[in-house]
Image (cartoon, rainbow, N blue to C red; front, side, top):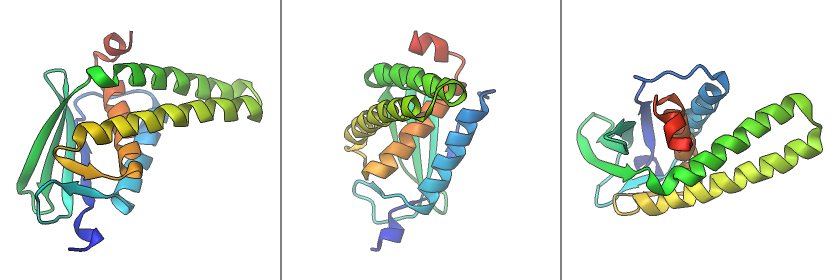
Amino acid sequence: MTRADFRLCDIALDCSFKTRDQRVEREQALAVLDLLETSTFVPVGHHGGPYRLKISMAAGRLAFHIASDKGVHVVSHYLSLAPFRRLLKDYTRVCENYYEAICRFGPDRLQAIDMGRRGIHDEAAELLRERLSAKVDIDKDTARRLFTLIYALIARNAGYQILLS
């Protein structure tokens, strides 16, 4: 098998929730493009892809539905949001500060906020890798992009404010 066999070829988010925040939509679109261009995505015990991934919410949990490029179901994996709550809350706040700083502050303040945002993003990506490891092996960059998609999905969800309060 080659690296091309263990990558994502299609990514979908549950679109039943829509956000009005164009910044979140832009981050989501960039994450999807990055994942389609360069991802390492290896379902445990599966012979190779590429793979289709759908991320949705199901009964308050994250649902990862993985299928082959031909649409044949490979595995579904459900994750509790509880371990991600603090990180999602912190990431939301630092993103809000970042967007505000773009308009109000100079590059020094922006750089400091961006470093904090990257730190939270890295921590969340590592947690995601750990939580998915029983079903899917992913690299750090893939985990970072997937966390961005999780953030976008949560930002769309009507319970978003409840989750982050």
